[in-house]
Amino acid sequence: MERILTTDYVFHRDFTKEYPIISYGKGIYLYDKNGKSYIDACSGAVAANLGHGIEEIAQAIADQAKKAAFVHTMRFETDILHLLSEKIGKLAPEGLNRVYFTTGGSEANESAIKLARQYHKDSGKEGKHVVIGRWQSYHGNTFGSLSAGGDIKRRQPYTPNLLPFQHIYSPNCRHCPYNREKGDCEQHRDWSCVQDFERLILQIGPENISAFIAEPITGSQLGAVAPPQDYFKEIREICDRYDILLILDEVMTGFGRTGKHFALEHFGITPDIITFGKGVSAGYAPLAGMIASDKIIDSLIQHSQGKFIHGYTYSGHPVSVAAGLSALRIYERENIVENAKVMGSYLLHKLLELKEKYPFIADVRGEGLLIGIELLKSIQPSAAFPVNYKISERLNELAMELGAVIYPGSGSIDGVAGDHFIISPPLNISKDEIDELIIILDHSLKLLIQELK
Ligand code: PLP
Image (cartoon, rainbow, N blue to C red; front, side, top):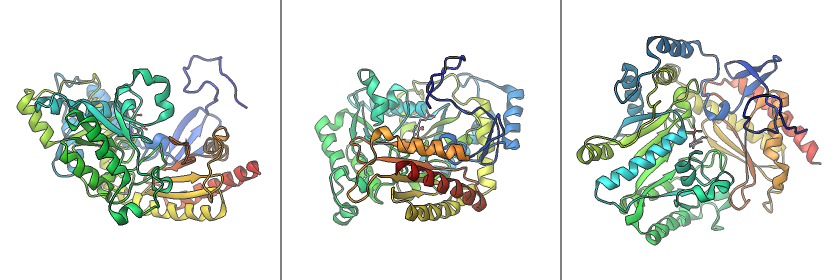
């Protein structure tokens, strides 16, 4: 039963909902005030990638807070800023070495959009300012990132405020917006969504376009949908042809989530800017940022006296950076990326078993521990559940009652993709813990199917 809360001082995210109050977390579990446990099967918002209650990270945060909680990067730096930048730079592809920090992924994408603009302006290409993004993608909630993204629901109320950025369709081969059969584009090597990219560039004029931004694997909007293998190679070629910078948004996929350090490694491409967030600090403190190519940095040094005309109070915040450095040390020491790969294929296998049991599970897909499950009312012919069913939200409610939290998502630009949810547990999850999660999911799906009868 929904209720409107009017009795406290919190500006709730949704005033119709009552949220359990969490007292503490340990490993993959969160515990509320009443002692009830929840498996954090989505790592919060795909951020708590090492689970909860890690003393070592808490200690690193406390130590830094005691030493120097805040220094402004306009005047000072810290050793840990250099150490963390080096670690991240070394994980990125060759030619991307300079790391810029923000507090969240939206800010990271804002920064990347501005850096791309400054790069072109510096190169004398004054007209280049338009960003091309994709429908069914998410890059954040600030105006620049929202304008670049293609989340219709979040964009709609603010349409008059949005920047005039342009969009193409995301490759979503199970529900191809061009009605092509899955695999057809690969076979004929003529990707309709890539052709549309070039068509749009020519329509707007390449002299006006600054950057193309995309998630390597589409997270919240489509539910862990990877593009065809060569899609990004084609995109890269077109970007190069028209001097458009390629920004890959690895905010959700970076730092081992897909069984690689960055998801771009699945496709063998090198962007001009990578944005990251979430997993970099495993959610222990707000931290995000971007990695810029040497080409961009060289231009900045040559043409702008080395100055990026941008900056936040909390860029490179020492406490967040300490959390990030500590988290990355754990990723390395405990071979977390490999665990994400191995446990990811085990989890995928278990979820595919559930697909056999429940007729409304239309698809299970993903890489590493970023797995999407698509729910359809009818698979043949393909039909989504009515929007007002909020089917994946309902599944999450049932799962939470039984002690697990998942990441629900719904709809798409034309309503074709229906509903989905993401399972993205902490990357250090064990096989036994996955089995425990599967029991809860199975039970929740059983209750859902009973409700639908
Ligand atoms: N980009 C992607 C791919 C995301 O998934 C998100 C958040 O979910 C963001 C950007 C925005 O990050 P933040 O919420 O930290 O601003």
